[in-house]
Amino acid sequence: MSDVGMDTIVSLCKRRGFVFPSSEIYGGIGSTWDYGPLGVELKRNVKQAWWNSVVHQREDMEGLDAAILMHPLTWKASGHIDGFTDALVDCRSCKKRYRVDHLAGEGDHRKCPQCKAEIDLKTNPPRLFNLMLKTYLGPIEDESAITYLRPETAQGIFVNFSNIVNSRHRKLPFGVAQIGKSFRNEITPGNFTFRTREFEQMEIEYFVRPEDAENSYKRWVEERFQWYQALGIKNDKLRLRVHAKDELAHYASGCTDIEYNFPFGWSELEGIANRGDFDLRQHAKISGKDLTYFDQAINKRYLPHVVEPSGGVDRAALAFLVDAYREEEVKGAKRVVLGLNKQLSPYKIAVLPLLKKNSDIVELAKKISSGLKKYFVVKYDDTASIGKLYRRQDEIGTLFCVTVDVQSLEDKMVTVRDRDTMHQDRVNIDKLDEYFQNKLS
Ligand code: ATP
Image (tube, rainbow, N blue to C red; front, side, top):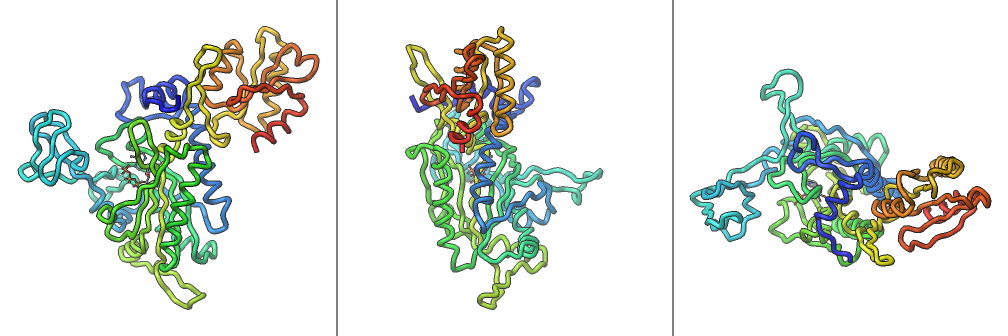
């Protein structure tokens, strides 16, 4: 079985410590989630795999970690104060509020999904709702203290463009990558961690000569698509969706979404946009600073164009979880396996004593576990019978289980069980490091 329902994933996440409802003891706070002990490891691995691929493995990229709070004029320049809005309308029959673009129907004639009443946008015009979360900086809550929690990480990169060119002696093309929290007062959060009001983004701004933008855009679409594939997402669950002309922002010349076929349908994991020089031009205009780049090769000064691959950590993590989930039948019993890629599995190895009453076995197992911890993420566990321990580790995606038994005390060998094949190897304790280096590198 490969097609899993969201209920199954949500319940596994809660049961095994990946994701908990936030502030649960107070009844929760709508569509807000906490990553538990397993979830935090998975999310770190997703971010690490991304950072490694787009920063460490490349010569043309730099990293950045800009502040969440930015000068309010940033959001004037970026267009978020004036344009980051959803159009909302209330159904006059059942009083429910909707995003207009989520309503069936055409033009001014829409239908309420709840009570099916007609919603006439002419007599019941939509109101614009800004998605930025507002707050006040400092002790006085007046207009001048208003600031925003960033709705995207990208602007932190644009405002640091000159700093990076100057401090890193950068020539075009080059890019800047950043991972961090963003906030949007979404009207319709939901589908578990897919759409929330607080989430993490992984964003790149790639600066190029204007004439190179189109090629660079195509390359990034390809590279980012391959990243998800390389981390194990099934081919038939992943697709590209090219935006139609009328979906594009006025300044953009192209945008492609990478979509995953979630249990609730095809949905965006990441968007790659060819943004022209809009962002740098706007910041130059509002800040009064010259953000042009001097291209020595052609002795010309100009505003670079920008290609932006922008993805979500939470959405990627959710796609990896859904995609990895499988149920199998083994000797008449159901086995649940999270077949996560080895880079993403929260724990690489579990060390399990076969008999927890035997203190020699326990001691040896603990010693093996602490030795392996120098190189791998390892968990020692003796809280249940071996059968149960295997099942738990399969369900959280642990790649290998090392079992220490009575025989191990004599022959200094342990059993290593592979998560996917369930094949068992008998391995010399002195050779375990090397064995796992080979398997996990
Ligand atoms: P959507 O159309 O789904 O609202 P978007 O096109 O507004 O997404 P972008 O502004 O392009 O999203 O943001 C880039 C990425 O950030 C998205 O591809 C997604 O992975 C992530 N993201 C955006 N909004 C949210 C959210 N509310 N919750 C979780 N992740 C989000």
